[in-house]
Image (cartoon, rainbow over all chains, first blue to last red):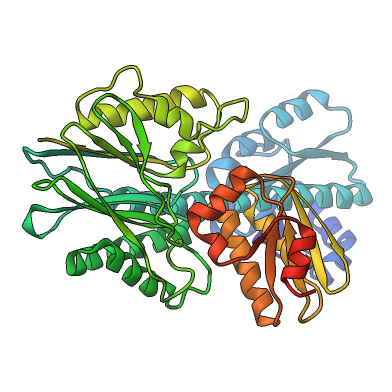
Length: 388
Length: 112
């Protein structure tokens, strides 16, 4: 929508008294039909005054030679009052020098004296058309900016719920990070300190992108945190979060989520999987093992599901990697996926001894692999290191 | 991503070829909704030519299943490549939408 409607207001600027009655007479039927509305000024100074008082004027039709302020000087001043006005110059026939100057100063078109009113009508209509298209484009740009702002809000929401620091202890290390894709995605992770020195670890991926996905992510994370603190047991936590997310979920959004509880004193990791990628265990020699898929369904789709949980006892020096499909499905320019095999083979030669360093190796490998290919999904990776 | 559909008496078979991701999930949704047949007519999604489906695409599959359910019809998928089968298995979608080896199996599985 251009936001401007007929009658289109046109300001005619000329010091000679005969143009005004001519315009009024020859354009009478367009004025009567509500297409145009004319206002008149004697010189540039008066014209600017009219423009200041009436911001609905869309076209200025101006003579060049006038007292006080001529048409060329007026052209310089118009954009300062209203940058969206189009100007049409009326010049003497063959006065190419002034016409060229006028065009260089931003006039949209010109007509010559004696004024041919059929030609003037065509010129006005062409000018109006260009102006309407221009205003449409401006409107589209504004809407795009508004949309971008909305996406920025969603992106900030996503960033704001991620932990900024991680629990520390003598018997474990934890590190996680996320690299968001350009369009707002739905990955998140969380690390919670639960009762008895136990840690709650979550990595999740919300279906779809944009503001609705970000809102779904916020509620998933809040529900997860509430359930984790209240229940503890991963299979119960997933069952409860799933039921809560299923309520009023008409849009069929869902979240895949791995939730694990780690007790550093026993080195026991208990996890349940809601439709998410299986964690990978890297042992002290750098060998990788995929933890079993416990067969749970993504959360938010079907209520009253049961989620199986499984426990593994880690050895000192083991690292467990929780990640989203942004890692394994990262694509290079040849459209190959990074894949599980690359992830599992990363540490076969050497493996750092810190959770953060291991996590960084994975990120660096994914980035190196992707090269200049655009990142289409959020990349999230969390590393837990067990200590003796 | 290309969609083509044919009606083979009792069920609509929709072939999806290419990739479905966040960028074209909306087109995928509109295409599938447009292919929905008469009331009670089930749909089979033939994914033989599908190379990739993101979570946004899975969500569309579920939305279409819901729409069909309201019309007392069913949705099935068939002919999944290994990587797409893995996506269905990991996400648990194979427990929500029935997966068949090919269109023939899907048709008989739907009782069409």
